[in-house]
Length: 415
View 1: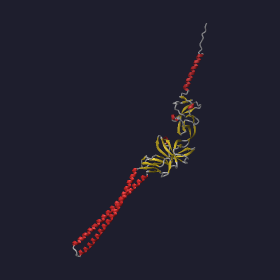
View 2 (view 1 turned 180 degrees about the vertical axis):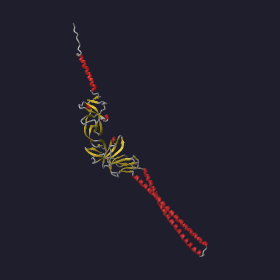
View 3 (view 1 turned 120 degrees about the horizontal axis):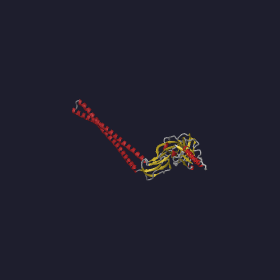
View 4 (view 1 turned 90 degrees about the vertical axis):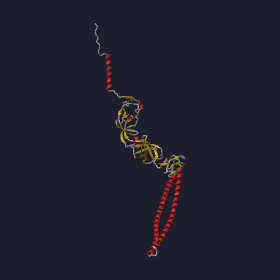
């Protein structure tokens, strides 16, 4: 009689299936609970820049490019216009104050000067003739007055004598009245003659004054014309280097046109362009340093030009101490311009990461060096070398400071 064989529940096949299922479930649970689900990107470690987070002294400064300029530059402007007749001194030569640089020619000014000279000569002749005529008239008036006085004296004698004779009844009343009327007529004529001569004398003085005033005014105009003619000879206003002269023989120069400049060789300054971002932090008296021939020279801002062009404004910096030997106009040099006091801070080097993150986050290397994780940070001021870290990093950590352009929004970089 056959015996029934019972199947075992925990056979090898079932054990394998249950074990496998349990393992899969365990893996799924681990992935759900413990696994790193952050987005990641594999990156070639050879193509990144890893920098140390350090603690040190933060110097707030900017580096600008400065160009050597003379301490003073004098413009040469044409006071009068004309054609260049002769160019006496070429640009690049040293000049002394008063040296002739250009000679101009202006026919219109020369003609006006000749006409004014002719007019003055006419006025001088007219004034002389007027004065001569006044003297002649004066003598004639004196003669006339003398005759009137003589006739009046005679008439008075006749009148006085006839008045006595009439009282003594020697002559008739008619004869007496005739001499009396003659005397009174001459007396009135004397009064009129005095008034007439006073008027003519005053009028003559006025004519002389008017002619004299006109002559003086014309002479002043002539002096101005002489000065204008002398301005056709362009001279150096000061001693120095004639760095440029924009004029050639035969060319036309207009009044007020700039034709060159003279550089004062007694000193130099540095003119630097500064980004408009710093316009509120740049002021007269701000200090800087410049390296020239392996030596440092102290500078100080002497003038700030407020006009902004192409995102930059200019400043003039003078040497606080000795001027470098051998410095020449037009040479350029880097200037370290101090914007604030030094302070102890956590620092990271300046790098391309900032353009993608704006300084709000950075990739921080883990202890293994096999990956870097995104971390939020807060940056403060910057200089050409370092960023000042306010929050998010500690000295001794390592960060990626190269560009993040190809990393997208991944949270982890795998190496």
